Length: 462
Ligand SMILES: *Cc1c(COP(=O)(O)O)cnc(C)c1O
Image 1 (cartoon, helix red, strand yellow):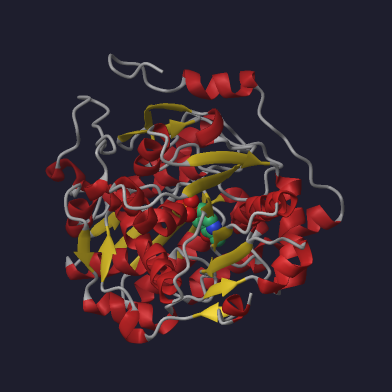
Image 2 (spheres, helix red, strand yellow):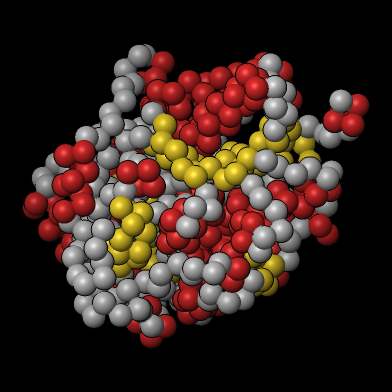
């Protein structure tokens, strides 16, 4: 116990201890994630095919399965220094309140204006776009964190930023929109009449409140139709997981400083970028046979890609214009029930995490949103931070695991990713407080409809 007391509430790294390279977990994977596929030819996408959509260096990163370390350019490291390292917090107060012998740590990524980890990749993607001499970038945003992060990054590098925001969020979160406009971005509710695909979706589903899949289709269309623009994505892609490895590398460096070895690492999973980043160096050790950890992905029961999806090639977007990715998916036409408030709405999952999960190297669990908001509120009251609903999925499972330790008396060390703050999610909190929040778990029939839309071709049986 006296030993324990030496661990501070917050473990920070010194500037000179910050990582200078990102870690690419694919280099250590025996079974590499399946490559992105051309939906027309069913052949792996080449650099040439990806170049009209994505920035050149990001394409290289996307396709790089061999280099374990990729240097972080100095310009990006300098930007990171403005808001990083992020603290690794020992949740002493939460442990005490729960009466658990478990030791709980969380890596807090909400200490920047965008309020989440998304800035870690936004600044990298904006940097490479600038370096290539582009005019601007287009993207989609769901809850708004990614759009905000990208707006900040683009204004820093003086790039134009066009954001397609899922309509339901656009309406529920007008202040998010204004933050983006403060940083100079143009924000359009999606689906919109500004794109061909948006018009088509609106004709087929009048009154739809949109989905990430629709917004992606629109943003890609605008990027490919406008000279000097490329599309950027805030999650799912290998390059994004690579940039987010900064989270895991810092976490590991902070733990190593105090000789702490985690038993369980927990993160919420939407498209998989924060989780992929947090676990990267730990998964690397696991893959190389050096250490073992329990790694748990937490997803909403209303959008359960890992736990109830199928592992198959599928479109990343509703408009079916994007490449195919082999991933755990609910089908690109799957849209979570309208009462779902907790983010993490994407129908698919990172190909890297999908492969790791398929190979039994990590676990996944799904939680219901009322239980998530209970955990969020409990955490806010004890640890002070008002968490994002997405992050609260990880809090839920961290608390549950700590309570299991209370029963068994095991002193496990639990690390979880607290990806962001929830100040713009007060409509969801309001519904929770007013007792209006319900849990809708899709039925097997609901899911079957989504699966029916997954492309069928030889080799893509599921
Ligand atoms: C976007 C977001 C997530 C989920 O995205 P991943 O790519 O799965 O990490 C989680 N938490 C917050 C706060 C987010 O903004």
